Image 1 (cartoon, rainbow, N blue to C red):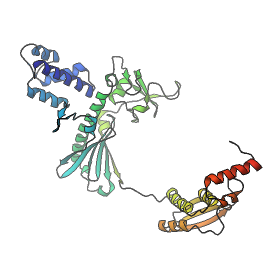
Image 2: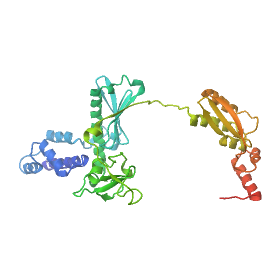
Image 3: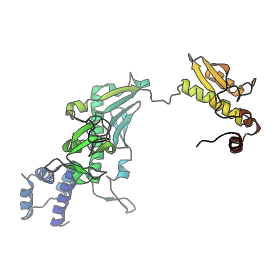
Length: 376
């Protein structure tokens, strides 16, 4: 490896470190120079013009410091990038004491999950960690121990930093580094401004603020798709400057005990849907199918289902056997009523002669064409 190549590699490290951490290039160069024992980057450049050049161990040290790996070869010789998006999607495993966990990336959020718990670091840097504990493990979960929780949050934050670094490198440099006037470029829309507006909460956000928070609203957390260079609606829309939370405030975890199992809610909406589906199942013609669709279904005290049929659509005396069977499974009784005609079309008996909706619609149009008026 030539001296020139090694110096060029240091420059590449500096540029990538600057983009990934949203720093000025001279700041990143200075940090790398200090890691190698120089007071600043110019001192390093001066030494490289004489007899000094970084050793392989020093390059490895800077590579670890920057946290960016260059392409490496697999066993079959194919080159892969360990920091590529595909690699970031792969789950990693680890342990803290006797407790195992998995690290993953979910839509830009860093997730660390164990048995009955999950710690999530949102994509927005100013957002607080979210801790969810399965209700079944609320008393025994290790994340109820502050020391364990802090270790998990540190692991999640480290993974989140990788995700954000990848994002910063994919975006334009001007999207994450404001210019001298505080102007930044939107990473998607490409507008440039020193003032931005959240269309979710009408917040007014300064350029450095929105860049620092990776284009998420510091107030409500809305994503970049909701951030625009103009206020919502018009220039007369009332907006308010938003204040970014302090570092301590944003890192205080939000702990929630949740029910993670799939839950069937036997509320009025779901019970009514199942009853109506049963009514449709036993409809034998178009009129009965319309009767099932238009029947009023209500649940009283989670004990009795009232079904109100249109007198012209559901045959008098026809027992809704399937609906009764479904109600029995759900543990509710059924009461039936007949209402006065509420059918939206004339000639309700027409639907008794067909079960084909296309045929019924043609019959309906023909009848209205001959005896009535059709509005569109």
